[in-house]
Length: 447
Image (cartoon, rainbow, N blue to C red; front, side, top):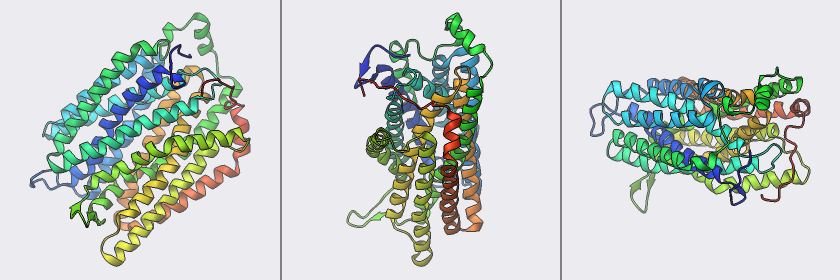
């Protein structure tokens, strides 16, 4: 439902959700930036970790990130059936504050307990806060995609700051100080959400708060159109699995590559760039390129050119895949010279970012357009579960690279993503028919 108060042409509630998610992502990506590095760090050094092997660390990374996103399914069910999106986000924030704070304790029990709280917290918060963004806009409002891009920039401001601040503190002083900083960030996000409730009225309410007429609509069986739209969503979820299976090499394989095989010395400063800082490159590019790429697609569509969400996701998958060709070049350079240049990682992250901006915020918006009302949060939860499957696959791809070789893995990812994206483009017309005009938009005076 459209909110009365607007800021810069968008509902004021968008900015409440923007800052809440900014700090939630600060906590999540801050922890992600140092997790694998902490696990492989020597257990007896000045900044001790667990001393695990790379294979063990990558497996845990894959399982953890998979469970983080898989938990979005029960989180969506909890919201749709009982609490509503707004209260479920509140619960998720509380669980995340607890989880990240427990990780600051230097004990094995605290490590696994903290991870469990984080998994539960993300599951409650992630699908529902995204659905609430869609709920700020009326049906057919062409500002919705822009709103999701603004929201997505907030995510990545948090991620950018996290890699720099949490990554530096974790690597330089103590891994557990870094985990503690992540908890402080989430506490700030929770405070923002609590204070901003007045701008979120009539958004994310539980089903029992709906009118009798609205409840009757949600209780009706799915129509043939809704069933067709669910088929399109399921295909988009398959692309999302492939996308994140490749993209999430950032936190695992590419993170280790930056740490162990990249020359990170800035000569004239005689200073080594922390490996975790490369986790901020993607976020920096999203912050700087998010608005231009959103404007490009907006104008592209206005000109009557192909700009359906499925097309954008496929194009994003292809572009992101091409970014791994730079990692292939880095691997080739390492094989010949014993180290690779930092610019290969930066170029890879640039292409990954362009691909992500074409695919990820668009996919979030697309689901809010296609999902039946009574399954809104559940379908968003399934989207995040697909993201989790991609993360799990990413962990195993990193494990396979230990035997197959990084050059072969990076090149294979690029080829596979290009093939999948190309196949989807070939069947674009029937997919658009199944969407039944869900992306038709109406003119708004405020853009």
